[in-house]
Length: 300
Ligand SMILES: Nc1ncnc2c1ncn2[C@@H]1O[C@H](COP(=O)(O)OP(=O)(O)O)[C@@H](O)[C@H]1O
Ligand SMILES: [Mg+2]
Image 1 (cartoon, rainbow, N blue to C red):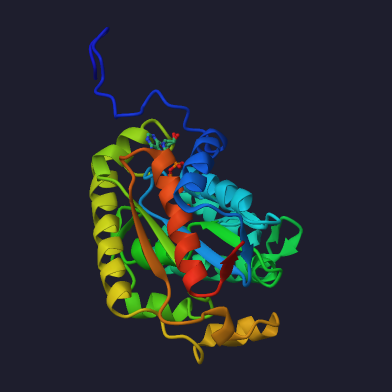
Image 2: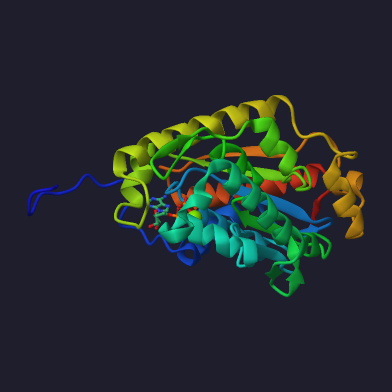
């Protein structure tokens, strides 16, 4: 523990206002300078923001949604998150906060719950007047999701401690199979920070693991994210005949029109220890530039 009067090392920018609204206000000016606009949406765009706990995933996702909304001609960006506020999401929140539902933290059980909650998210969650992520995409709108299936693919591969027993993580192929009705994100924004930085940001939050377990756990999750990003870069998710294509069709979306020109998701890596304002501006412009190359948006 730090002695009285002793300064704790501060991260650069630690004094800055880290509320998403404040970040978005500054990032919007920077983004307009970098990539102009406004832009017109041609198709729905799904943006997944991912990273380990404490990386700044929620802050980044919410600020990014605000900036994108302001850069689109008629607005049309929605912020949404997983786990959802639906019935399965409720179970997940309970499991993660300990208590009598803690046995649900078995990686395999959590994997299934997250996959089920994701289907709720896609088809039923109320998101700014639309029904589900698919309802937003069909509008069209840009949906910025604070975590999506890529978090499941990283987190549920890691072993868990349930009732003092070490339960191995779930295999990646199985996790992919139970999430195969979830369409790929168009853009995967990965916020990367070292585990020590992440832990210092969420210090004192309620958490069911002891600190050293939490550190080891997050180190492992971070490695799984790295592996996942490497393999997605080399082998993007196949379009068209995957199970998720049927779900898009049921919402009136043509799978190949929804994912034009090449592999998805398109990866954007952010250094989460850098300036959040610059990161959000860079992410917004990275998304809008590639989206206009692919015909998902047009610049006016
Ligand atoms: N770039 C940043 N620098 C310093 N602190 C940050 C940064 N981004 C987020 N935080 C703070 O870290 C904590 C966790 O942020 P949050 O966005 O909730 O992370 P996550 O969703 O990844 O768990 C919050 O207190 C937030 O204000
Ligand atoms: Mg969060």
